[in-house]
Image (cartoon, rainbow, N blue to C red):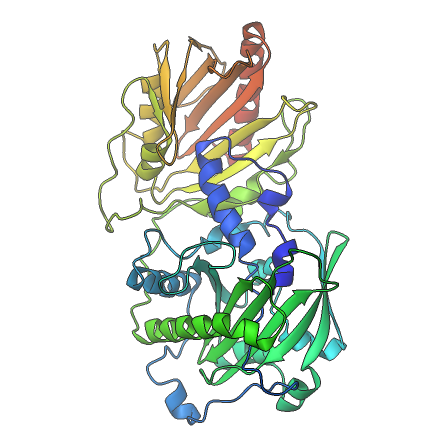
Length: 486
């Protein structure tokens, strides 16, 4: 529900910032997923104060015609969302990476949460909180976001999508386990969501849902008490065979069912498109490239680990790097970095199929943190490895042009080579300054053993301290390789 706007993702909750190539890529996904609390509420036509959830008049045998009879996997659910996004000509994948969201459970990084309603029985109409959804191994899911047809993306113009799937009885019980009598008793109720000791409260009103699927309900939700500038939200939930659909859209100045109706109508159109896409049967997704490490295993690798000086190490989530936008399956990666460039976008594209994570080593001061990224390549990847090419291109350069995601660019100058005592198949270590007027020196190091590579960046106040920073990073790399059995 929109109440889950309070439930920020682990990466955001820990203050992760976009300071490196994997961080930027991860943060985009995390922010989108965080906004997609996925659990907002929809509106109905202004009729009576007591809303009901109308059932489809079609017999069960025809309601699921053409729908998959078996539960859909995370990847298949994501393919449904992306299929609708493609039909709407979206310039980006509409679905987020489910493996990234799930992997946070392996590291124990999810906060404690509690969901309560008054009356308590009305909790049946509150969708599962996102952290519980990501940790649930019994029900498959995918999340995404897209504007309504013809609309522009924005806080009140982006529909959040959550698809869940399991055996028909299991998904019906989990997401639609209520009776018609309970619908009548829960026409209006209060909802409280607590995350890490902080509680947000809302008022919820059930609305007349469009006759979609086998079971459905809609609702609108507003903050309670309502403050100036607070947005409300409208949500729609539909059950179709083994597929459960939850849609939500924020609405400004939401005070009545009439205010909610445009959002509900837009979501009804999207729900029908998602059902039609699932019925096409074209929901198969290519299997991931063979990899000796899963995202969950990568997160678990860093659980409880400390930095060179005993500092806490955090790697909240990991995921599989997808192909570059617009590329076709099996397409070759774009050219590697040119000499004396540090091109994040082409580097990520060359690592399609790899498992990656973005983490941080906490520091004693504001400047003393370290960001790191870790990548485990697919076993099918052959030399020359992208990391080795990147390391080779940094050697001997006195000035380097950094190219970031989105096309931005900045020079590193001057650049000084550093040495590290680490046994690895390929390494690099450089110190450089930016023309930002701070006078700070940046230290960036990387190393690869087998399929596993690590890169880290840190800062210091003077060039004389850069070698010590590089030595500390090398010590951290050795500890990670040792833990991974490399």
